[in-house]
Image 1 (cartoon, helix red, strand yellow):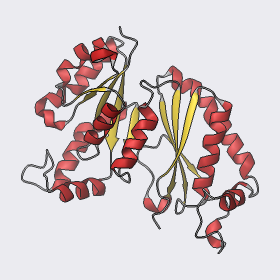
Image 2: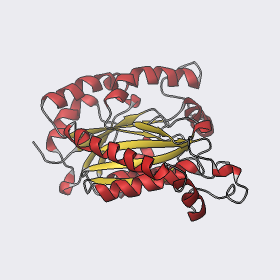
Image 3: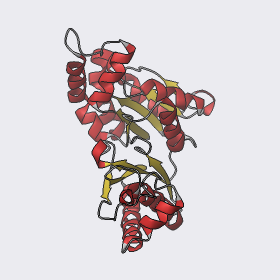
Image 4: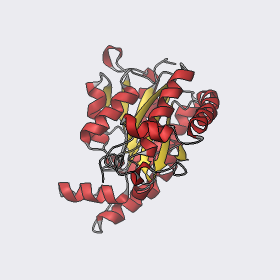
Length: 287
């Protein structure tokens, strides 16, 4: 069996598979698009593409009845202990509808019905696959360039080494990220929004960061939380999970969650050399 891991890329139509496939190619991966799932075991057994390139395979509903074979193909891969990672791209129904309407293209499964009907059918078809994914990425609020950057952070060095942790700030009023593995609520911290001179700033500025991290009990809270997350890392590695998203929320995703996200990522990188933590901020600038 090859020591290389094959990426199997799937997910909702309109969630950005083409963008991710192109981003992987730009990173030096060899990408096979729209492969019938029945051919997966033979391809994954090779482990690499031409010239030893890391291999990624795109599977989606364009494959028609072949797509229904994906579950069976994944079962075969597990039985043979083949090295692969399943990457699932997702987005909210609203985001997907807007994308299909902007391109004036029908959803592959809508037939004579509405776009939302096609999306509902696809979600039902993909529910089991989604639950098996190693990496889930919510692209609802990512433009093409942001999604390419996210892929570079996760897969830029080839196969995943250690565990990559995406520490993601968000605002509860915009919804909890669908790709979060862990959700941390920091609305118990005094809100800088109510301080006039801090309101227009974000948690990326020293003024806001110092105010948030200097609030009573916050430093101890972050330290304890990082310790808890770090204690989970060895378990994740044993289970083969190499990408984790920690979603950190406050009301608007502008002050408290941003400052806490930056600090959690900094401390995680400091306490565990097998962890590569990256802070990202979903809702900064949305107000």
